[in-house]
Length: 436
Ligand code: PMP
Image 1 (cartoon, rainbow, N blue to C red):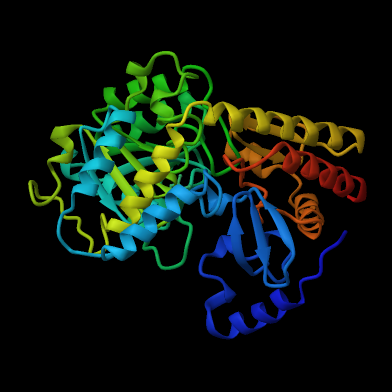
Image 2: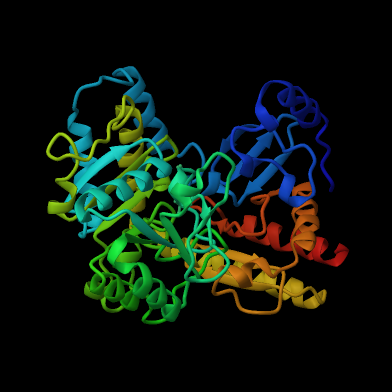
C-alpha cells in the first residue's frame, strides 16, 4: 500500500531552480523530517488531498489550521465565487467587513474594536506597535516556543537565562531589536515574575498563545493565565493574546471564552491577534481589543497601520461563510469525538509496539510527541525523538496520511473527517509503529 510520487520528485527539482528552497514557506519543506521532495498536491476536497501522481491522502495538516471545515466546503466556495463575481478588491469600505467584525466581537467580547489585516504575522506585529504606542514603553515579554509569525520582534529566542535579553532567531534581525524582547518559559509564573521584576517598568506587553499550538498543543496550567494577566497588570504592561491558532479551534469563540477556564474575567487580554480560521482559507488576519487602546490606531490615533488588501471582499466573505458553518450545532463535539477516537487508537498502537508516545489533546486537535514525559513547555517538547517522528511521518505519508512535517505541529480534525478516515489512519499508524 506504499504510494509512489515520481511527479512530485520532478516538480520539486524544478521548483528548486526557481523558488527559494522549492517552497514558499519553510515549514512546507521536509528538512525537519530528514529531507526529500515534499508532496505536490493538485486538488483537495473535504478531508482528502490528491497529489500530482493521483495518490489520495487523508489530511490532518488542514493547511496549518485554517481549513477547519474541510477543503472546498460548498458554503465557503460559494461565498468566494460570489465575491469573485462581484469584484475581488475595491479599496473602499464594504458592508461585509462590518458583518465579520461584529461576528468576531460577539464571539470574543474583549474586542471592542477590530481591524482586518492580511496574515497572522501582520496582526501580531501591529498589536505590538499599538501596545507600545499606548504604554509609551518598548519591551515585550514572550514565551519560549510560542510562534507569533515572522516579524522582527517575535523571531527572537531566549538569552542564556530566563530573565535575560533576547538574541535574534534569524539572520537580519539587529541585536538592538532583539534586546527589546525577553523570552521566558511557558507555564512558569515565577520566571515571568522574575522577568517583570527586572524589566516590567519598560515592558509594553506580555504576548502569549493562551493555548499553545506551536510546540504541540499545550494547555496552560490551572491558574496560569490568571497569574500571567495579574502579574502583567501589576507592572502596567498590556496582555496580548495571540489566538491565530486557538480562536474558533476548540469551540465557537476563543481561548479567552473557553469553558476550560472557569474565571473568564480574570483572563481577558487587552489586545488579541487573530488569523487562520477567520478567513475560511483565504489570506486574513485581524486584531482587536479595548476601545481606548485600539483608538491609538490611524486614522483615529498616532499608531500607523494600513493595507491595500486588508479587508478584501473575498477573504471577508470566506471568513463569514466559515464562521456560519461553525455556528451549526454539534460541529465541535463531533470533531472532539473523532479526535478522541483517533488519539486513543494512536496511543494503543504505539503502546502495542513499544513506541513511547505522549498525546496532548484539546478537543478536535492534538499533538503526538515521541517521548514518555508530559509536554507542558518548550524544553519538554524539544526533548523528544525527532528522528523517530521523521520516520513515522514518512511511513504515514507512504500510506496516504498527510501530517505536518514537524514534530512540533498539531494534528487537526475538520468537520469533514469521518469514522472511516479515523479507522484507516489508526491502521496506518499501527503499520508505521511496527516498522519504527
Ligand atoms: N501566530 C500564531 C500562533 C501562529 O501559529 C502563526 C502561524 N502559524 C502566526 C501567528 C503567523 O500567522 P501567518 O502565518 O498567517 O502570518
